Length: 434
Image (cartoon, rainbow, N blue to C red; front, side):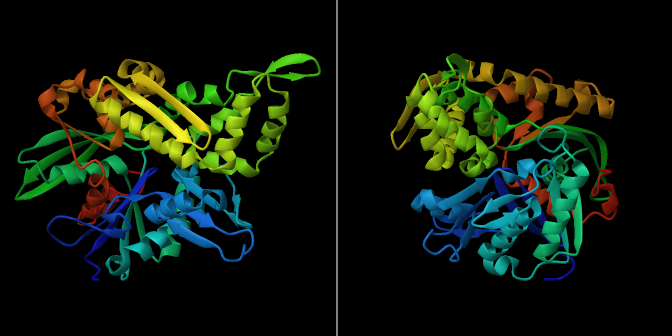
């Protein structure tokens, strides 16, 4: 592959997408010949399978192959997803998996090498340059941006890249969207991922047959689809697993600690609880609980590694409520059965704090650009959570409906990142200055 090619990688909390761009023409999405058919959106997850009788026979899989391994043998498979959400968390130093220690950069490099392996010939000969998407604001409390980028750097160098550049994810989406523009326009791009919601405002102008672009403002907030998931679990599932109930200790009735349920806010942490001190405490609580059957369900969810099944049940509900006013939530695994009808209004009430944070971030982007809503010519929304009606309503309250577009929810960022590689002034769009 010649040096004129650039690889764009959108490493997302939920999915990872890879694109290649040459000196002209559209970007090309890298495809993966997965078990269920060819795909380009590669699930950002890992599985580690090490049978107790042969722990040295450790098998690592990623994406749909990781899901397949977990579904086949959940008891003996460590399944990790959404691990991007602790990239900027100094509190996460390492985790033990099948007798080995993994830091964040180890997890990411393991994942990226698997992505390259599964892509086959398409990524056998890597180009010299890669442009990696990064959120405007990393997920988590008090995120350490420098730490996250240093971890990214280590992992991508292990993949084999030497020229590694970073660009904000909504900027990548904006470059993808700019292909469709036939006139000068000021564009606001909203990218809604699993862990973050990011916004960029860019001015695109046509001159001499080329499109020039100027960044005007940006903002981001560390809440998105995963936070919506947690609200669903907190309202529908956690109460059935003991949240809000009590236990008896030395003759006193005390509340079950809420911290046992906070792990459901992060899919990655759910898989880590099985070997934690909290897990030992939870087993003891079952004997002391006022409603021991609920704690037994919590233990079953964690012991039997039901996290992925729960994730699917929550995702199915969100998708259904994007097109219907009410839908059924159904989580059934082992002895657990939680079924309930949910209205869209209920769901929107549960995620009200996240919607407020997203709305404030949109206003910060406008303020950073020094523009009123009327100064935005086009709005481009991308990412899975952009399909949530309450999220879309934030933009419909500010902008005329004819200005708002959606589409290419999964491919726009990676394709746009690869296209940025054609820019003459790369420094304008990469690093932390964009």
